[in-house]
Amino acid sequence: MMGVERSGPLRITVVSIFPALIRAIVSEGVLRVAAEKGALNVDAVDLRDFTHDRHRTVDDSPFGGGAGMVLKPEPLFEAVESIKGTMGDSAGPVILLTPQGRLFCHQIAQELSKEQNLVLICGHYEGVDERVREHLVTDEISIGEYVLTGGELAAMVVVDSVVRLLPGALGSEQAASEDSYAKGFLEYPQYTRPRVYRGWEVPEVLLSGNHKEIARWRWEQAIERTLLRRPDLLAKASLSKEERELADRIKARKGFN
Ligand code: ADE
Image: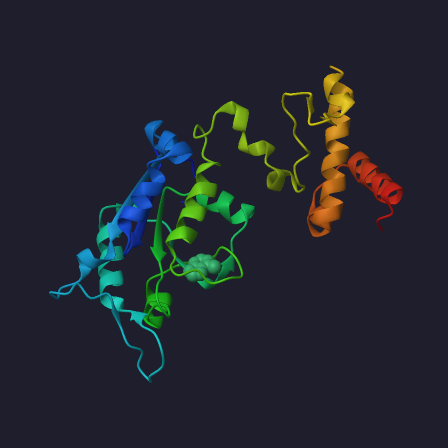
């Protein structure tokens, strides 16, 4: 499906033991608006609906002993198979949120935004039965080098960043193509009224009305900020020859090398 024009909303199904948490997040703000505009459809599926015992058990102790609990395979397989059954041929990636996954970034968000369907599985406890990794999921994603109590917040980070990239999900004032990570460097500083706050003034150039000067100042600020905070980004950015030369001049002026 990747790269093919999607018809209709991006459909994301999140499998979780806390579906209410997912629904709460997608029912506010930009995610809600994106759904109202028909760009997005998020469904939260309760993993416990795919259990068959009185206690709706989703976890069990690990074979071989050790602390913690492991998510059982049966409810996860049955949940995903049921979801895929409703998707027909357009069933897309099945992604497990786990600290062991590939590290999430803008480029992965872009990849995912082109799919027709996504299934996100929120891991819990000490992890999931390895057979889920081997035979059910097609991808594993981590949102950072730290461990959360569950995959729900990670899934919501993925959903939130993907939704920003859907055509028609954001207003033009928030165009995602202007994102810093899309361009490969960090954002320039922004100011709004009042012009002077507690004696701190807005840079004069921004009040000048000279659009060319303003654009140049912003670009220089963005480069400088990136050099200071994320030099690794700048090294990877695709800059024109002129931009690269300007970056080198700023570097020299500011004593970077
Ligand atoms: N679950 C627990 N920690 C996580 C992380 N860092 N990324 C994705 N899922 C997780």
